[in-house]
Image (cartoon, rainbow, N blue to C red):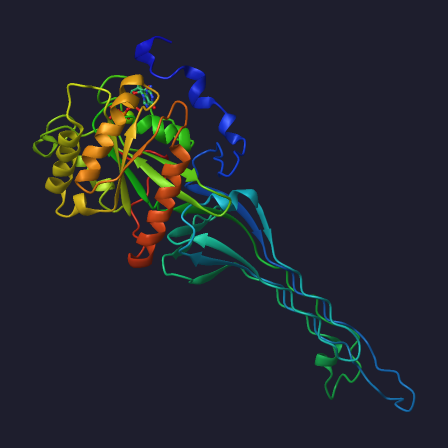
Length: 380
Ligand SMILES: Nc1nc2c(ncn2[C@@H]2O[C@H](COP(=O)(O)OP(=O)(O)OP(=O)(O)O)[C@@H](O)[C@H]2O)c(=O)[nH]1
Ligand SMILES: [Mg+2]
């Protein structure tokens, strides 16, 4: 566990942040979810009833068995408020209500209620057995029946005819559909991390999500982009993308170049990480270099909502220099946040600011869907 190995090994597996903190949210350590398997069972239709009306003064009341109720269906609704499949992982079995059986006196059984499940916009639903694509939920609030409720059986009153005035049979209800489903989410990367190599991008994503990119104190440790789902609160999560570091001239192919920036061009916002611990470097100049590379990749990308965050404030030289750097940036109208991924200081505040910015962005921009890394949490 020398210096080169980066953070001490148990750090990335620490569960200490599972504990709620006073006045703050807490993170959950979890597997990256971009696909999920569910079992859906729609409600069976209710049985039709065999009954005859026998009432005082009505000696020939006749057949009066009512029909069974319809079974409830399992329905998915595309909800733009959700961005990950995490919330669905708690409910592996989705079961809609059965229809009630029909009753005497021509009473129709009550229909079973549909079970409506909210899924993120962009969720693709497949039948695991047949591989059939059931739906691509890419329209806001669109609904699709993934398991249809059974039909209610007819009661004996229905079968009464001139040739059979007293039928002694009724239909059973049909069973509700049952399906094993595979849900895949075309990941929506809400937040992109940018910065020089070694700025601490991978360390941050490994602290706030279950993504485990390699971390080391040499440049270009991260060679391919990684995604992590950050659970901000019970109702709110977002996807963060860690891409390989940029250096001056990246747009001309220096370092790993800018080819990975395509994954950031569809994010709603960027988090720009700045390591100010090297006294030989001018942080403002570094900041401008990265923004220039963003601009060279795509006109306007440098204008995207951006939080600028100083990393490694547990290091004495960073801490010492921070006020001066903050003043330097403030003069130019750029507020700075500061974190230590090691002590977690400032991390909740940054997550809070991300959610606030995403909410603002969401008000004006439509959700954009990026092509799915279906098999893994990595984008090559
Ligand atoms: N002291 C301290 N070290 C940190 C912190 N965050 C990251 N580091 C260290 O900084 C080095 C680089 O961290 P990474 O997370 O790999 O940096 P990166 O930005 O992903 O780098 P590339 O993948 O090369 O672009 C590692 O040795 C980390 O352990 C921090 O908050 N405090
Ligand atoms: Mg990295």
